[in-house]
Amino acid sequence: MKTLETIAVGFDDSPDSRAAVRWAFSLASRVEANVVIVHAVGLMDRFEGRDDAPAIEESLHRLCDDCDFERERVRVHISNGDACSVLLRAVDDPIAADLLVVGSRGQGKHPGLLLGSTSLELAEHASVPVVIVPTL
Amino acid sequence: MMLIANAPYDDAGHEESGHPERPDRMSAARGALDDLHLAEDLREVGPYLASRSELMRVHAGTYLDELGAFCYAGGGDIDVDTYATYDSWLIAQNAAGAGLAVIGELERLQDGVGFVATRPPGHHALRDRGMGFCLLNNIAIAAASLTAKGERVLIVDWDVHHGNGTQSIFWDNPDVLYVSTHQSPLFPGSGAPYEIGGMKALGRTINIPLPAGATGDVLRRGLAEIATPVIDDFAPTWVLVSAGFDSHRDDPMADLALTSGDFALLGRSVAQFAPRRGRLAFFLEGGYNLGALRTSVAATLASALDESIEFERPSSGGPGMTTIDSTLEERSVALRIAHEAAAKGDYS
Image (tube, rainbow over all chains, first blue to last red):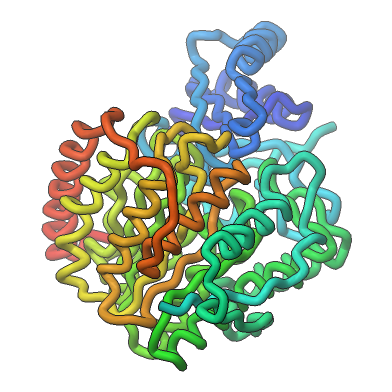
């Protein structure tokens, strides 16, 4: 079985994605893996002129401190695309993730439906294991 | 020459407050038809609702079921960019049907140029997922209806964003040649020169990424030097165009620097790829500055129809000529490696 070296976490600074990052930090500490925080830049980000990068960095630093996780073992990857496609690409170089971690949000307004659920889409299409972290 | 356009359908119900993909876009595109003053040379067809079997040439039945159920449950956000309302399912079926109706009329007349003025747009929609403002892939549904009859379809996509959905749907289909010019880096993040098609369709995908600020002369050189030789070899029997006008310099979604004059030249270029009259149709994709959208649609169609109207001067002098050089090189290397891998049964 391949060693777990790189964990990619979908992150948009929502409570659900922060829970996913905490879980990933916890696992990474135990298996000595690195963590890549993956943030998707969509069409509406561009239309509304949003630059989330500074807020993401700041939030991440807080999470590292809260979880006592070394900042040097985390990097941020900001990429154009929808969240699902960007995370699916994280399996390839340069990230080469062995595991994808996402929060459980995305069930949307209609929990019985697959549509709009990044986590369920990932589970269907990813070529590496996917962990969906529930928000407690 | 006659313009075959889809009849208007009620798209007002597909709207979300503050969203750039809005009903006013359709008014702007329709306004362009008024600007052309075509009178009896404009023929409208439809409206036509695409059937499930027509949609399933491209989309998974499970996705169609989910999308319909999602809409009828009241809709909402499919992702951070893409919304659907209660009415969106019906409107999306009308958008897909519009392309089929226009293609059908072109086939019947064996003459004219088609214009499919629809929303929501389609070229980001994947087989099993809507994204990037798109729910159903309108141009892919039309192209698949043609390949089902043995046609060879060239799709030229000049929207500022890469048409990842169309590329993905026809990735391994040798009867479709997909050519995209798009700004890179930009949403959706795909569209690199080394993306060249699947094992059964090696070379049938052509991506020409352009840097921010690129002008029409750069794009034209990319089409001429990278795409045209492949198009000539492919010898399409139909030409469909994902005509996105968000590559106009005034569009708020991106940073290419095209003008309506560039779209006029592009309209003429793609018309020359068609084997004969009645084999060319333009499908509206993006374009979010209403003024630029209207003048660009008019310039494109006027040029394809050999009508004369006034438009902006074509743009030139922007960055990107070296990008064209590197794209040629990257594509060539990717094709060589892929052919070697395919020979060993090691390419998918």
